[in-house]
Each structure stands twice: as structure tokens, then as C-alpha cells.
Length: 84
Ligand SMILES: [Zn+2]
Image (tube, rainbow, N blue to C red; front, side, top):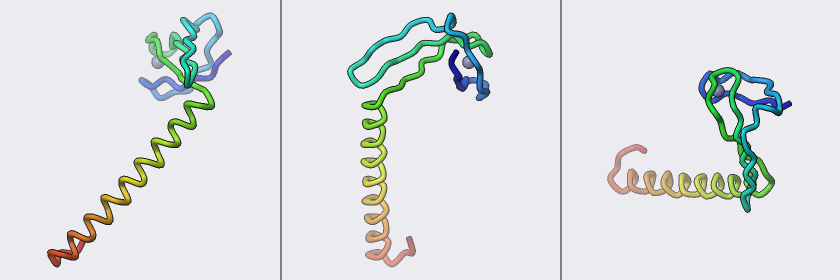
């Protein structure tokens, strides 16, 4: 059994193993294709330690870029005398 969250209805669904359509092994993660009992579509769920590391790296990079952009906006506002 799997517990999934349907991305269409946003409900949690308990899914039997027979509804797993395929399991694909990737270098960074495993992709599990599951037929959803709620909406009937096939949803893909990815899991794996390296996937989490990749997501963390991306989130850190995005946060750093947002901080740089905010600092640039503040500096620009200070130059032109407009409150940020
Ligand atoms: Zn669904």
C-alpha cells in the first residue's frame, strides 16, 4: 500500500500495490507511476536521497539569488531616493 496525495483533488489516497503502473530507476531518484483511485489519472511520484539533495541545492541557490535581487533593489532604491 502507498499513501499518495492526488495533485488534482489534493486529497490523500491509500493506494494498493496493483495500481503501481511502473517504477523507473534514475541516477538521482526513483519515479513511481501510480494510477490514482480518486481521479483515474496516472501520477508520478519521485523519491530518493539524491533527489532531496538536488532539491535542497536548488532551494539554496534560489534563496541566494532572491537575497541578491532584494539587495540590488534596495541599493537601486537608495540611489534614486525611492523607498524600497
Ligand atoms: Zn489523482
